[in-house]
Length: 352
Ligand SMILES: *Cc1c(COP(=O)(O)O)cnc(C)c1O
Image (tube, rainbow, N blue to C red; front, side, top):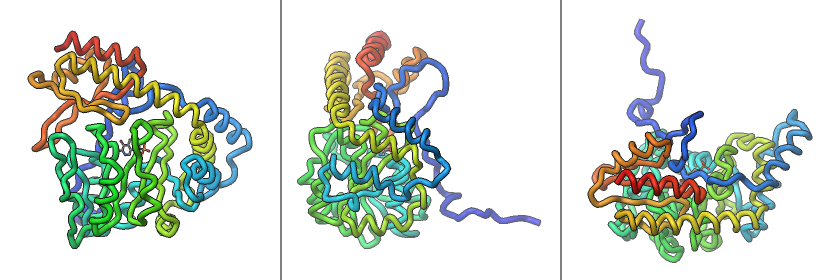
């Protein structure tokens, strides 16, 4: 008896999303997935310990109220009902796509940018379309153009891999011309000069997502959130898992978001190292895109990026080699500690 493929046709057609390498063991200097090189705020460990001591036999607060209250204060939002918390901002992105993009519909993203949005569309049996950045990383007006089937647009801001920012007034213009909501993915906004949280008050078409993975040094914790007008948050809440954030992560995230001095200090260190890396990479002959994030995108005019990546890897230094079809390739190097950055730059000077 032959059995047919039990999975939805959309699944058979799609390519899986492949995250950056996460070597387990080994002594890599890891500059490939934009993690923070410093330990998380000390208050986080204390919060996890006391939550664990209090016991885990009860289900967690389904809507992470403690976190949302604290985050609303810190981010100067009108109240907790403007926030939905999730198991990493990747879960938040999944919730947004599931909530708004059905089979046969479309989402839009810039190119090159974060590939996961395409995977999320594929899972829905939806289509995606890309608007190419100009060579100097401006986003053409076409990103805001109408299209009958368009249900959602994504804008990582700062963008990855470029680290460049579209200024908030321009983001608002896109939101006003698009026929659908605009998700501004602010995974890296804490490292930038601007952000788009204020736009959420001006338009219920704007959704801003944040993560604790990068600027709060908590990639291993899995906590992210979205900021939108309360009637939008209420709709998103309908489709999230009942207990999508656990007791330990809610306690940890609440402590982290309240650690404002720690954040300012950490961001200052990362930005200082970023400046040094940009300068040295340019001296080594790279074309360096000025970054507003915790990584630097660089391209060498005549050396093979793939070979440079492989040489570095042999020396236990892991950076991200990225190749975008019809666009080009390059290296995305996360900002590490000063020592890590120096080791990487030294090795680069020897490889070139
Ligand atoms: C890292 C990253 C995320 C994922 O964040 P998590 O909270 O760890 O899931 C989302 N968007 C972009 C653009 C990122 O680079």
